Amino acid sequence: MLADDSARRGRTALRGHTGTAAARTPGKAGKRTARRPAAVRRRVTLRSGLPRGSGLRRLYERARRTWDRPLTAYYLILGSVLLITVLGLVMVYSASIIKALELSLPASYFFRKQFLAAVIGTGLLLVASRMPVKLHRALSYPLLALTVFLMVLVQIPGIGVSIGGNQNWISLGGPFMLQPSEFGKLALVLWGADLLARKQEKRLLNQWKHMLVPLVPVAFLLLGLIMLGGDMGTAILLTAILFGLLWLAGAPTRLFAGVLAFAACVGAILISNNANRMSRLACTGATDLGPKGECWQAVHGIYALASGGWFGSGLGASVEKWGQLPEPHTDFIFAITGEELGLAGTLSVLALFAALGYAGIRVAGRTEDPFVRYAAGGVTTWITAQAVVNIGAVLGLLPIAGVPLPLFSYGGSSLLPTMFAVGLLIAFAREDPAAKAALAMRRTVLGKGAGVRWKTMRRRVKKRPSGER
Image (cartoon, rainbow, N blue to C red):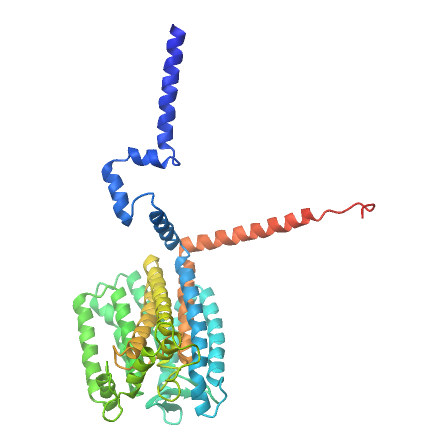
């Protein structure tokens, strides 16, 4: 009897232990959920809006895990920039053929120049992506000094070249021109990021004088040199970069509002005193050409977008580029994209710029290095603001500012500094500790995999005896 009681108690204990272990086993999803309190189950369901265990929720969780991986920003930047640049080369070739023939040039003239700039820009991107952060910071002051020097040279008669009413160019000989103000955006980002980072390390950014001086005076110096040449569009972008840096530095609302109000007053004065700028402002959202055709470009840009439909008229089949739409391969290349590739093409371009902007914000938000945060935020503000200004002008939502679509429009002076700036973002994304560990692990795994394959192939090649056929 004692033996039977002992055996029965052992079996009962074993049964209880097995049931408890099964309930705690990760693979027993149903038992684990059943033992959770109702409030916990409700919180799990409401977190994603999908019932737990459903296929949609599993898909959502998998997408969220993929989105939160350390290398997501790195691949988003690399992939979106590659696609934007390649699609831009295709559209530059398609949009510039008629313009080149009008000027008695070969049909691929503008495409070849843009392709050469893309090759050089890719080299700059690779160099910038491999440079350490300390070297980027050391480069900021020489780049700023060189940019100011070139922008002063532009205003000297006989050296500066005027195109489209704006004197912002320097001839490099032959068909090659340089616009120093495009490099001013990169110089302001790097120098401003280094300045604010050093002041943050010394705990000086809580004083408004240190936040504004010398950042705002130097930015106004660049703006003054740009406005001497009459380039209002680049001045707007430089102002956007300045505001982005101040916002990242934690400028108080009253200080931020004061600088914004001052810039708005200066901009209003400059616009009101120029008939060309006033006509551009008056043509915002226009659907009529006007009595003297002053809104010709804005209206024909809308015509190009409207005639594209869902999927466009086909690559190379644009009608507006046959002399109707001015600047089809530069400022209004987005309109030609809408006409030839339709709504699907334009939305694809917008999605690529949105992905690039998100990745830049993610890089700036996840770093502990103040220089990386300011520089990544400045580059993201620059590219995003320039895309918004260009696309908004084509859509009739903003005045025509005469700025190209970054990485997409024709223009080597715009492409080169932008590609270098994207290389900065890639370098910063690689410097993230989690991303650096993931890249190191991937290289290790690939190296071991290559060794295993090589050894396996050696084992498979067996030496046959001399007597075998």
